[in-house]
Image (tube, rainbow, N blue to C red):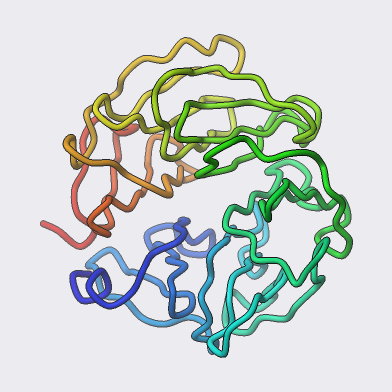
Length: 261
């Protein structure tokens, strides 16, 4: 794991649905997989820069991404149907080819996706066609979609946590005045986010009053790309500001390095 952190940038994380003990890592040099002992192997034939990355919520063989090819330019919206080994462009996106730095899929309707490329773009046909849904929140860092509705989208920003209830058309704050570096939701509608200087915070969609779960693996810094194991929601993985990959089995109260004893 230390070698990986020193050699590439990490842009996205997810538990592997086919093998939840392993973690998928979207990097500047393609898609990787880390085993529980921290051993990292390449998954993708491509060594392109995967900026936006998200797996299909139910089919372990399908994954979505965007970013930059090695030769330069943008990848558009790309998809893998063989567990991340090979990738094909599905659509260039609006004013594309796009480079979605943030990419999110609805956990209940995987045909609905959102990507950030200047504005927020949305697809309702599995990424084949895209339209501009609305303006992106200022200083956007992360996007995720509610399990309650494909039209409810959360955005972590440098100014707080925002929610849209109209498919990214308009945004309202639900946690203001502090930076929020990442956000993810569990199937029951629990919101997890990270606030630098405070730590991992938790609320519910029906009662968005946030409580602090733990200060996080690096209380002086931050974590990015928090991902909840949708099959075991108290388990999560994150990457710190120093590019260390850490895991928690108690909903963010405590963390250990992936592969650590």
